Image 1 (cartoon, rainbow, N blue to C red):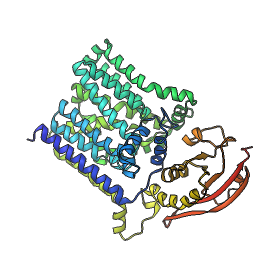
Image 2 (image 1 turned 180 degrees about the vertical axis):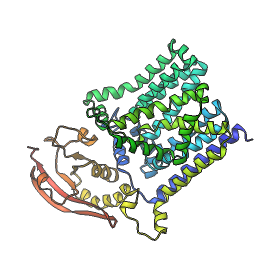
Image 3 (image 1 turned 90 degrees about the vertical axis):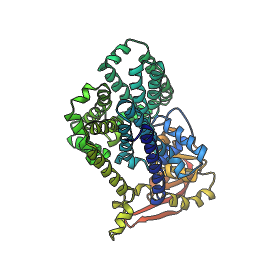
Image 4 (image 1 turned 45 degrees about the vertical axis):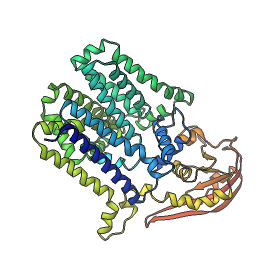
Length: 484
């Protein structure tokens, strides 16, 4: 039997190996920035307490990474590349303390090899730090229930506050934590003390700057959250629910998903064991909440991602306690094979003798942007005082990332704000020209009529696949006359 130290060393080695492999895969795939990555990078160049669609944590992490490692694609993605191994190590700490070092090892490995983590591991997103803070908050919560220590309750509050500054999904952590305390004798006793409430207030205090920023800007993040969850237009949508459940099954892995259902249905011992009961309460409520959201409106597949933190602890612990190591190994092994297939799909498809197309490439949205930006660069060099202007977020995000222009503006004739550019850099009567207008369409008559002069400069065109060409037409627009 391996020692605790050997299990820990094994997990560290697995995390280092997987992270190095993912960095290599990023270069092997030859991908550029995904639109949200370029979008978040733009935020990181203008740090604030909030942004249109998200709190500020992801921007701060990207800024920190690039301040150390420079302006590179890996530096942009590093917050995600490091957050997932960090989460796996926290899961090891929880599993070792409450089950065994072997359970902790398999919990970390299970998490690192989930298809969700495999896919998101190649891109920087808010889910990466969210999952880390959720898992660290869970560790602190369990330790606080054990010890009634101030430091662990303060750590719970710290994780909750930083989690809220990462993604509002962290609000579900507070609700689940409260349920854990209600169903725990130690938790009920501590609810009568100041410790958990002080921790909660610490979390709220950390989140206040984002609330103040939202108040100063008309609460755009709250409005955006309400819009994407369709809070104002609820309807029975079984199709959305089935799509969401399918996404959950694909995210955790086919065999691991079945294993989780088996664990939750068949094991009455889960509720008897205090730590297992806590993991169930940190797993099921968010899944149920988002499932109801999907059934009556809309829910993205990653909205319930923090639930997988508890799942990655429950399944290995249950299987190992019931001597089902082979089933656990199969679940993880299948996920590893799926991850390899995802990473090397272009090479696998090429081996079949077929030509890869955009329809067959899951990475198509992250291709062709660097080359397109290089074709636009001569125009920005020719007109260095012109602000880049576009009607859509993707062009602005990618060109700002690759070209780093002095100025940019978003075409924004309506009062309804749809992204960070429309919030902070809308084209107005006071925006100084000229403008380098970047358009997907060659005919910009309806835009040009709002300017005194419009000059067609040329076209940037990058063939990516036979069925995908990145095309942007460029115009010099001068003398903005207003929208009306």
